[in-house]
Length: 65
Image 1 (cartoon, helix red, strand yellow):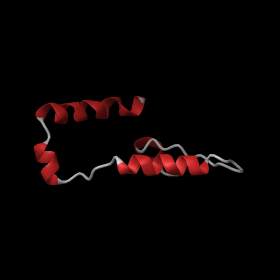
Image 2 (cartoon, rainbow, N blue to C red):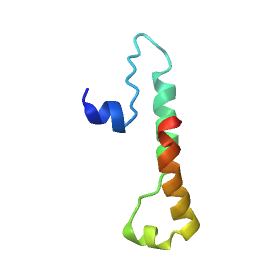
Image 3 (cartoon, rainbow, N blue to C red):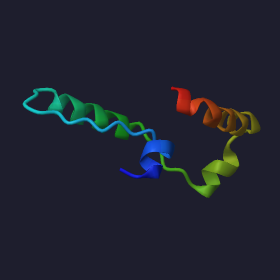
Image 4 (tube, helix red, strand yellow):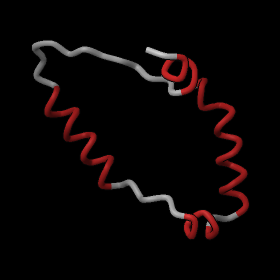
């Protein structure tokens, strides 16, 4: 562990031992990955001002979630 992991990344390290839920977790990850989109400079330029402001505001509350 390091400073970034504890302070910036908000990680949760979990060790699962002898559990049947691993395939469910993998499937959930793959389903989420299918919904993801790459962030490019062009896409950022196309974002509305309100989306950019909302994104900035969310950075302040993200640690609380």
